[in-house]
Image (cartoon, rainbow, N blue to C red; front, side, top):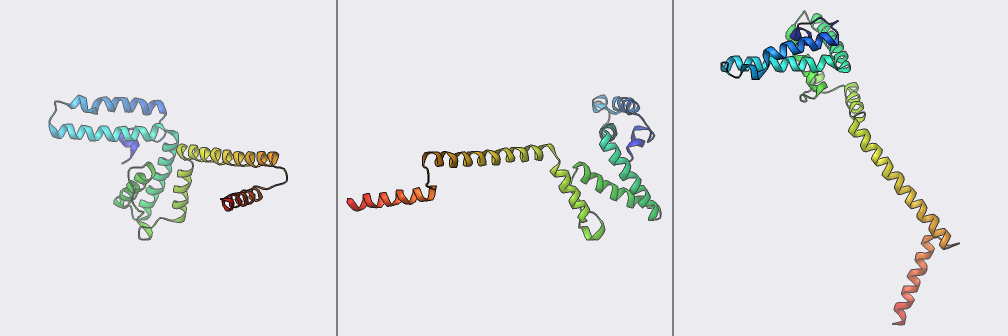
Length: 185
């Protein structure tokens, strides 16, 4: 599915043009507008509305749009390299689009279904740069730092109160005292 064709735009369309095209098509194909239409017409309008919404979400976001443009150009070139086989282009683009935007996981068709090292690295990098991962990593860092500070503070406090003895030596003397107490009984 070519998002630009769905919205009736060229690749050089501005954000304002994208918004205008989306609003016009959304009003035309909105499911509420077709509530009293025949079942087939309602389903077609709903499908078209979903396609228009998906195209808008992709093209209005600069990062998604750039990614879409790069991927659609590379797959268009791939289709031309395979004798213009648009079925090859559509199948691979849809799989890649699903993987990229979280619409499911499917394995790449090349190399027997196994992902390349670059793809795996990219997936790990994308996961590690998500907001949730970074917040969790920061929280883990704070907790580890706090543990170290408490441990270091406890050692310093011990040394101030018990000059010359290590904690292990003190525990040995406590055990000896307990043993001596038990022997007296």
